[in-house]
Length: 75
Image (tube, rainbow, N blue to C red; front, top):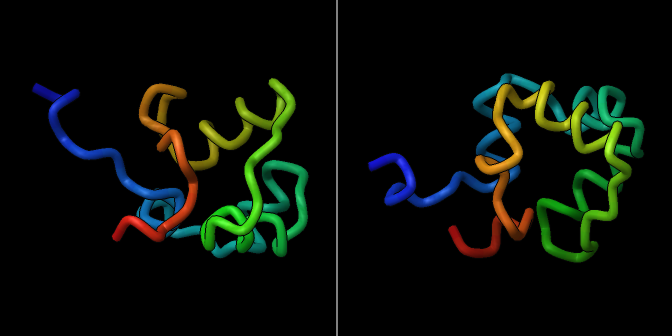
């Protein structure tokens, strides 16, 4: 089943969507440093609903497909 597969990290999703940190940041309305911090786990994502929708759209995923923790530390 699809739920049995481990979720991809934010970095993996961004790379799969062929987006740079800068491009994703622009689409979501945050700084590229913020995206970098999310991926490194040094900052917890705090997004508005429109930003969350933009993130899902940019990455081509549903909200349920986003990782609970954006950091790549579990790789």
